[in-house]
Image 1 (spheres, rainbow, N blue to C red):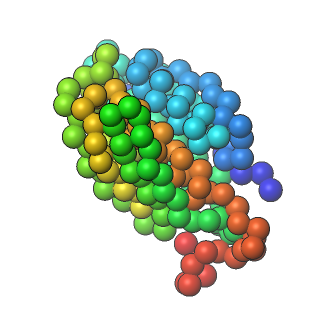
Image 2: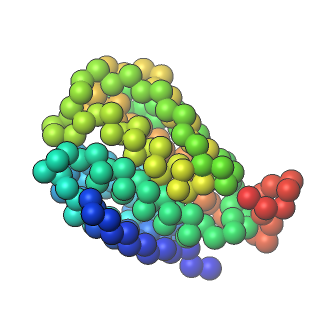
Image 3: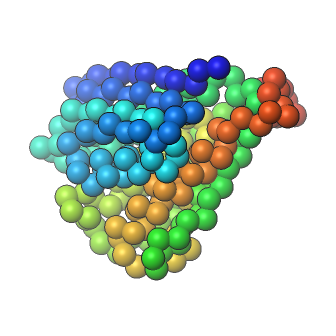
Length: 196
């Protein structure tokens, strides 16, 4: 069973191509024009073991908001398409991820009801040229379009770079666990309703 999706989306603000293989090895090809965000998406692919391509041409001369938000939209759509009808998936995933002084918890449910509940206390407004508030913006777009319930909690941390990076890594590791196939339920949708 191939769990690969490719999606393109073009608006007046962004032109985005995303390809994801949920059963990859963490090979990435990232170019969004936003260096710190490229670093985060590279970590997302590598630590989730997702083969991930994200190319974005956006109106970064304005700021990075549209590029980051729209990449979250398209990546979320690609994950939803690749996961299919969710037969056999573990459905839930969680990760408690340390990064030096930082500790972040992420939990995921492929519920079909997209929502994001993120509590991050990031001390600086920017990391490089990246507006730190865009981390939560990305997670919100991702969750809404992937149809996942996503919780992200900062348990400790004072370094803005570490908080964001630990958040991206925790989310992707939780996703990796949630999309994993459980051979005991290979032909079953993991829900008492029979559908997600």
